[in-house]
Length: 437
Image (tube, rainbow, N blue to C red; front, top):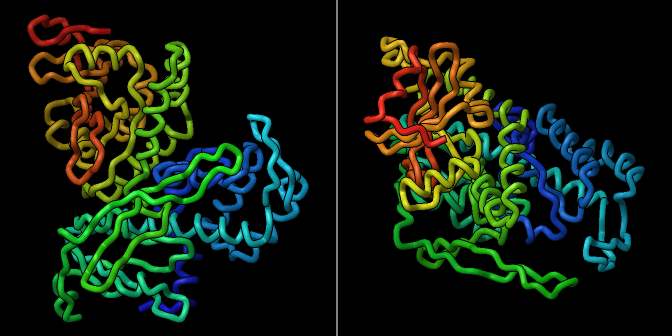
């Protein structure tokens, strides 16, 4: 078991997966923490009442440095304080929001900065651990919940100490740490041999999980009551419920904000504005860079794991086609998992002369922002994005609508294949392909 000091040291380490998790985040501006959903926290960097992008950028850079170099909480506060004071984001101030309502609020303070440090470093570290443990789940499928077990450990967290569940047990969707403010718990992955040597027993959460909605506060400006879902695990007399706002596994939700964002985009009345929003996101260099980094990591380990990465968003024109062809609205978030990515560059594809090389795989998001045509594959009922290259073409095949990837809670438009063809004339077969855009 890690001591409190050892765990503090562990959070100061620089696992590449933790750094990658934090760096792929975008930005979300919210007034109260309750306004920002768990999925947004998982993929967007946010600080309550930091309503200016320059302030978010300043804090984000320092958090990135803390995760990358092992900066202590004390150094984090010391480095940020004078900059935030210079920017005017410090102390208690009367702030007027976009609706013209004035409110006395607490902006920057040493306590707030320490909290920002703890939340972001712990969630990034645990997201990295979850990714690594999922990749090794075949060899170590049994996961043990480990609490620090000192005088500061909450009774509910202590109740889970040394409990073992399979890696795919539903409890890890809501109770994978951190599952509360200041949570220092972790998860230990065990092989069957190690589990036997410890005398451990595998527990199932089946029939022991229940989800309810709780009030988390209210907006003093509007009177709106904030609510949040929390999931309770009951084991005999023990009742374990994550804090409101922590009812999620950050490692599983790294693409979840895209789903929520797409829902907001589709609610915009203006068609040109919706189109512009999708195009802007698909053209994002940071998103394309994050995808390329993920491709490198997957291909370098040469063994497909379980992670899923968003490629980009389906635009208005293609979404309308998908709805027309299937009768169901697509999710409009195109994702690919490690297995399908590996298949696109597999030996089988190489033999057939259709494999994509590493650079082509890393550039898949570009295909969504710069495709030349879209075809409907009548044989497989698939949409095919096509980008012509000389006499040939590169092809991206998403299944839609709402394909269900194994182990994923959301129905998405999953890319099931990507390849190249040497002769673009293959698409002139009217019995097989219909050009829809």
